[in-house]
Image 1 (cartoon, each protein chain N blue to C red):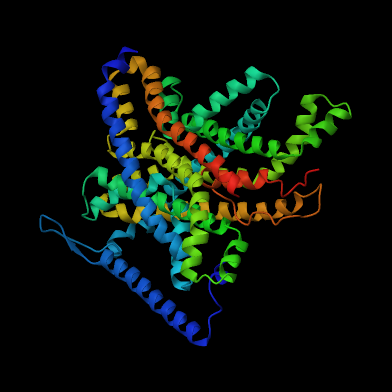
Image 2: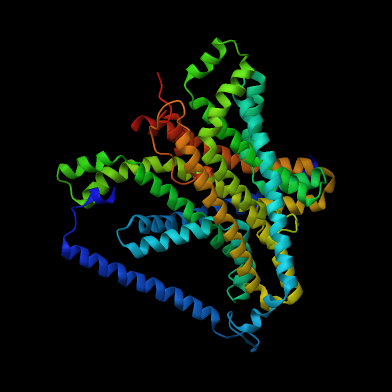
Length: 215
Length: 309
């Protein structure tokens, strides 16, 4: 137990970086995901095709490979803004298709009748989207989006294996120094992760309950 | 959906959108071509040494060596082996977890829930390291154990949702004809739940295959690590080439498994309405459970597939 208490600053440092990665790449993935989702539902065929291929390729590439590319190949191609930024780029790219899929399923989840009704009372395309479809889609999208962010929280641990000092990196460092108390250390690190994932899960469940009435 | 949102386009609008589509297509193609050319252009590094472009033959000549392909093949086999063993254990664990979750015994139900929440909220990678260090198994078994526990938890949740979505009459009927509670679960409820949740389970197995690459971190000799080993052996000049080939192999494996999952989902999906005639088309593609889980749950719980009452 004392190994945990002694190294608490190390864990907190790691936790800070984990949260930083989560926030930055989460925001990035949200922006990129919105763009990809817009491309996928756009009437322009070439954009749709591009977005589909992008989604399929990225979704079928293991995260380890994406981060490996960012940590080893990009610096080799003389692009090296530091491992934290590289990991952030990798996580953003990896998470964006999942965000896009969540958004798309939300928009598709709005019943067609809603759009038909809006159109038949004379709303234009923009009005239909902004007053009828989007407000419903946004609410439906939030629970799956939170699930994506829960997965992202767990995925940040992979960045720890590629030279970023976050929680997993902290765990590795401390277990190397204190081989005698591995169990306590890993439980402590797990507690940090659970702190984020479980609270996000609670929020998701609550939102979902609220939305369920709406459907 | 989209066609509802605006009036049917006339000939002018169709023409305009077609031109727009072609133009954006050309822009995308030009961007990709530029990227490929930029990667292929020779570069001068900081110390003035000239590096050949990435598509230069000197970066790809190793692939005429048989031994290189053999090493990569071994790596791919190791990946598949880990995924296969972990999939079997994950399915078994998933069944156990789902029974624990819906058990009538209170302490069993609660303890399973706690274990599941713990496992699902933790990164797989941390679990691997955990098992490797605490039980000092080899990297293979550490990877297998972590992957099976984690994916078992998710499969268990899916199965639980499947069991919960069945009409209560199924269980009542089973009990009424004199089956024991356990037999009802095993012979009446579980087969239906399993079939209903098969698309989600298979999608999770695809995720499992993808996640075997995490064993790279704990030092398992899988595909990515064998690629890295080759890079170390032949020199960093080949790093991009090896990476690209490893990526291609991964994509080939994952895409074909996803495709297989889709086929199976479509086949069994149409059969799953065994009790009632087909009421709803089955999900067309396997969904990423982590992602679409609530949505998938919502669908299944909506009772579209099996009518209530």
